[in-house]
Image (cartoon, rainbow, N blue to C red):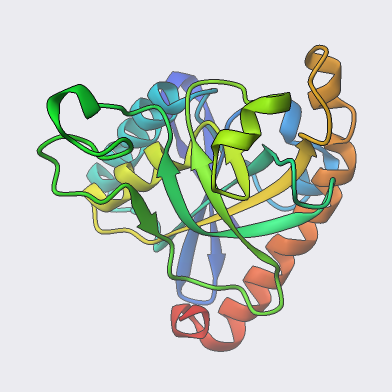
Length: 224
């Protein structure tokens, strides 16, 4: 049975057991958390955007560490935009970039955080067998229409880079799963984001089942 733990802002969060492993699922917003995912876990809702995601996940992991209950794997999941991937398709990110950071006037390449020692793109090396792969860009802006043309990555979100950096601080692995909710045309309002979330909920639940089955049969080594 999942172990409920107190999270930030009064949340009750599940650490989900898969054999000896404990999984923490992280999502941005309640709107992405439909009945199919709700039948499987209670996520940490980290809020929308890299600042909220970084702060909330770091605080939660610190609280779990104090309880001696750090997860073995963090799974960031939710929706994403893409102008080239299949709408409502679910993809695992194989890398993530931070599209906001631009210190090029100081001589640093765009996308590189000054003095951090980090490259512009961080790899996500774990792989769920049989699940399509894509590259991911995280940023604080909602990309729409012609905005996709400037980005080399396959899909965009607003949280994964920050979630990965929080995990790296505690040497925890992260998997990012994203369902494509929009991007095939310019957004006209929040309804364009919400329209297909119920389909993505069901497909993400299937991806979670594939992940847990892989872990149950081979542990983390089965994802390498």
